[in-house]
Image (cartoon, rainbow, N blue to C red):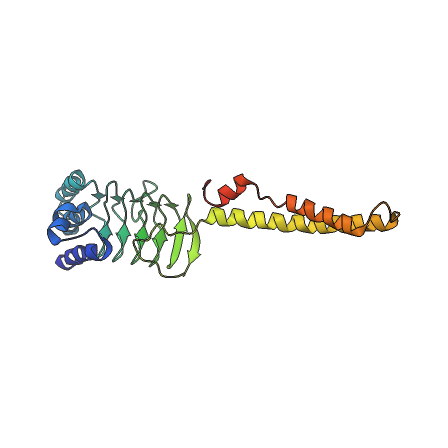
Length: 257
């Protein structure tokens, strides 16, 4: 237990640029205080002492705003940043060096007995307000975007965003733990791909229409129509059909997402 507490203390200096001295960290970091309460309460819980561990967790909740059931298993070097509103259920397992932001819930989805809360691997980052629910497995180095709701297993080295959570990034470049806002915008990427596809199809239609117009022109007297004139008209029509209006551009640039 002492080894875990030392690791919890040291990791704060590695991951929080606002941590300036040991006295400030010890007295002003509710995440560390909640873990100190929890590790002692968890030891009492495993020994089988009734009531006292749960009462200690309630005291910790009152002081820190973080609710950790004494039955939860938490590895060493875990950092709960800010921490207000964090809830960790009885059968949850949090791996070493996880980073959990405020408002996170590691909860269950029903009244079943046994393992009903999530298991997090090592070096997992759970963004602010994210909800990880049920007896699911999150692999090592998983990143959960802020506000996401995760209901299914997630393999290692993946990024999950959205409601419900979707895997949008696998085994990619290494990202620093504090850069949990650096996530891909999957909706914008899909919309842009659809718009590009529409433009491609419209260009193909324009080419076919131009060919049909040329065929008609060749059948008409030369004075009535000429091939260059038809081609110029087709190019102008194609430029008008490229879906480059201001509303779509703003949406693709992030205004509507």
